[in-house]
Amino acid sequence: MTDTDVIIVGAGPTGLMLAAELRLAGVRPLILERQPQLRDTPKAHGLGGQILQLLRYRGLLERIRAAVTDPTPAPIFPFGGVHLDFTHLADPPLEGLPLPQRRLERLLDEHARELGADIRRGHEVVGVSQDDATVTADVRGPDGPYRVTARYLVGCDGARSRVRGLAGIPFPGTTYPEVNRLAQVTMPDSVTMLDNGDLDVPELGRIRAGFTRTDRGVFAVGSLTPGVLFLQTTEDELTEVDDDVPMTMTELQASIRRLLGGNLPLGDPIRLSRYQFQARQAERYRDGRILLAGDAAHLLPATGSAINVGMLDAVNLAWKLAADINGWAPTGLLDTYHDERHFAGARALLQTRAQVALRRGHDPAAEALRAVIQELLVDEQPLRRMGALIAGTDIRYPLPNSDQHALTGTFAPDLTLHTDQGTTSVAELVHTARPVLLDLADRPDLREIARDWQHRIDIHTAKTEDRPADALLIRPDAQIAWAATIDEPADAAALALREALSCWFGTPRKSAVPTTSA
Image (cartoon, rainbow, N blue to C red; front, side, top):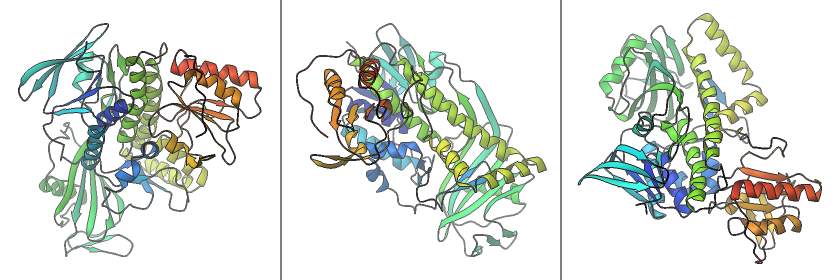
């Protein structure tokens, strides 16, 4: 008998999201976090990409939006020294919320605790061991050392993951020499912001809004709120920095002076942070009963992607762990976590490494490349494609049978659904993180097959405009496991559905309980 079902090491966004998803699946998670309190050190300042849609599917997005106090900026995002400007699109493929990570962590902490997660702060994991049945964590807590056992342990403990090191999982990649310093400060009276966003500074003259490249690095400035400046400096440095050591105004001013050759007067600090980019990915996300997620599994050398990818790791992993712990996981289900999320992590590395190539070049050839890319991004099709790549919405997981419906392996669209009970949506159907068979063409033959799995899945019948398929089998992480092609022969659809149900949700159990509409 273990002390808990899953030990989660690290209470950042990934670990907290994993705990909440496990609780939705009826599993007992224990989070062990070495920091005694919720972090106040500034980290990421925004949340964006596919995770926003997933949070809406869980009924959490409005709660998160309510915590946003900064004005939501126009949908313009940096990409390696150029900009993706979605302001002319009615439905941007990439959206963001200006929510500091510490505030996001408080919200996720509250959510996980409301669902019954056990979160212990000030408890540091110093050792990990495993056998065929359990994993054991050696913990140093406020009252002394102790041990805790579980069926599985997940390292969500960041870039310097102790879990990854103890498991001996290689973490190949590159540490870039550039150090980024970010600041949000009030604007002093001696600095004037011009109508186009440029700054008029007594000692330095006119500083252009956006990016200014010098022979020492890059300086960036902008403003979303009257009287408040956002600043960033990027310089190459020979020594690795510790992101957990707070940055000071003195350090920021020195960096600005090196880049611009003079002093930029600044008001009071609102936010100060510093980070150094790495591009790394764990060779494997699973070693027996030890798994990795978030920054412990991958480090991305650009802003705006890490939290999105990490929290989606957690959602993908949770239901598969729960299936194994609850005893119904089909063979190989847990291994699909590595297959799918390693693939997604590699896609994220692809676009963030491309950003490195764009932003680090300073010669005329690099300037020409940025100019060409910026010209391409004026056109809607490449702009949408790039936005989807960054958001992670272009992901189609590699599945066992490649000869399937085009929707299979993709994120379920939020269709408006009309039922006998009224109007609902795909988002509302997956609030509880249970699998769903959604019959969109009144196919009693498909519902009859699914009835043998109704102890594990919900079955709904509905109509929708321009239905994309006759039926959709939606996993708890909102990915489509199977779709029935419109006008597909009934016997072929029935066979494919049965195979998909067995592949993802295990052995069927006969039941005579009738199904209902959504």
